Length: 556
Ligand code: GLN
Image (tube, rainbow, N blue to C red):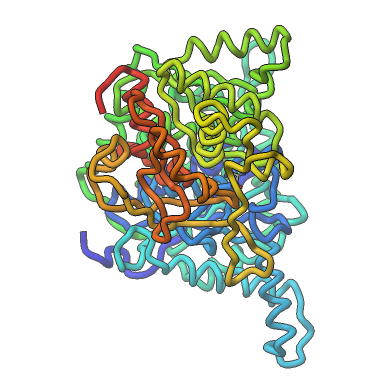
């Protein structure tokens, strides 16, 4: 593909109406996949109209997982969808929030950049938003030095929200800045079904489009979430009332799995519509989309199950572990198994809690093929996680500990193999007799008081051969993403290692234990980093692939 197939940057702006949680992010990333299939280099921007600067301080209970980028940006989990769907690496600037925009404008005002003018939402905030979008859209994202050809922008929230108003206004103005034929507006809405005959109701969509048009944005394509494909009558009605062509009314009906969404959109000519709007040509054959289809169909065909017990504390809210789930799915696909995740609330495994929930939780744990302890903060449920790690170690059950999961396995090992009674992490018990895990902050150079070790850091392998190194293809080091403050206590490393738990990868100072592997066990592995953030469909994260392989009884 020529490096400049489209002439200038093309933008697809995805807005949402009626209610949140319609899968706007997945729709936007699927459109990105279509653009990429047509040979365009694609990047993306997620706009979150909340006042927080980033997602770092937000509770996973409320907002789902905090996604971590290479540069240490703690961002909305939708950025994870974009990275996975488009196989790109984004930066913290690809997530724009109201907090960040205001902070920038206020900083400029303090420096006197506005030359005494009254600083206002329009034009100062709206200009800042447009400058930001334009700058970030041009940042290479696919691992090459090439500027992207297209940028998919998703506006979070719902049209009509007070807080999204400045962004809508900025995007309205932006169509003129970017120029005619360079911006395509896609609005995602809901078509509910009501009554005994299951009538598809168009009124909510009519209203949200009316609202959007009232704000000056005319959608080029309308994507309607619905249970079943839209009837032709529904489409005609929406076209008539929403000022879009009938062909431009697309149904985003339920599909068997997420990977089918780009295919479904393509079958409804979305790529053709976007290319008509933006003026680029689409080649005859689309090999990337063909691959995507093979993957989506394979996903549906898998029958043999593999059961992974996920021992965590937000288990009722799977969004809190979205990337972990995705990494498991990518790996399950690679070993041709249908993934079943058994969610176990770690407090229920606590050895001193003898309740029905406790018995059920243990029965579930014992029936799993593999056990995963994901990342986490705070001491609730820690004893249950330690019990799960103990069970996996003693019974040769495949175990993967991610971040906190590595620390948990280390505490368990110190207590039960080294006999260090009461060993714990300083995070959970400052006064414990042995700190197996200690506070080892990394002082941020950019943020006052920032102590979290964040983003991509290199981890060299320290042994020539081990399971994890084999899984990574024998490479000398790995570059993975971090988000933690605590580490295995350097004073205990020698004792732990001489008892058979080896930290096969450490940071370049040799003090921070990054990859743990237990000798003589089918797969008992931990990583201080979060490998899930870099897992991709078709390119599963190696430590996760190892867990799945071992859980299916395959050699590593
Ligand atoms: N709470 C632990 C720490 O800060 C683990 C963090 C995590 O799992 N992301 O080190």
